[in-house]
Image (cartoon, rainbow, N blue to C red; front, side, top):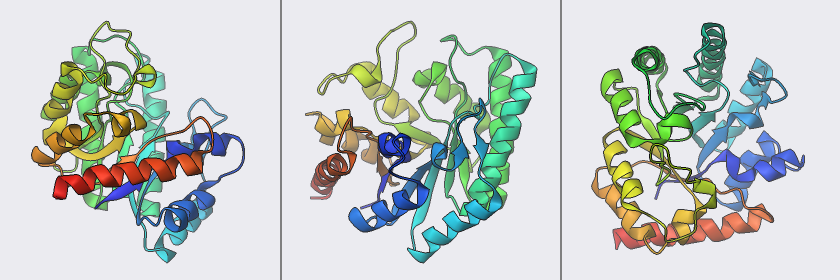
Length: 281
């Protein structure tokens, strides 16, 4: 059973100054006894800047050593503030340079994959100009990934990337073996809809979200599973549908509980294990 925990799950503890990157590694390893771990770049970057600046090489090598000592797999790094598209050419270039810095950091730390968003916010419609630029950059990053032994790609996370058609268009255009999608299961928003994934309640899966997962499935190489899914009566069916579509990667919980995050993760992890065990029964 390939399990991991996404770094955003402990964002409250990070903000409160109660968990740094090394405590995070030790918690996943010792408390939850997992060999897979997901990073979120806020744990090792200067987040006071508009574009989060990566930690220095000494810190990155210390992080790599902490993982090696525990024989842990750095399954994915979710990178914020280095998305590909912005209408301003100068901002685009600054974002590109930040993405390159994060790819270098991923190589130092031994990551198996890197999530770099296609867009931040903006219109529901992806322009031809944006599509051309985004696919060009993903090909470039994927080729670097091929040379470094990892893959790169987007998440259904922000902006028009919350529409499955957008990610399908991008994926078909990129067409590179070291490109893939980090699927946040069920996190889709129809064009023009004000629906918020954070405000959804268990059991509110609709046909758009279900179909979105299946549309993205050919390119999915990693997943984020939130508490809404874990608690949903449809949880086993949602996980099974992705598995039946050919997915065999890690299932990473991303759940930043409002309080008592460590205990909340104990509960969430136990429930996810139960769902996945039933799929193999």
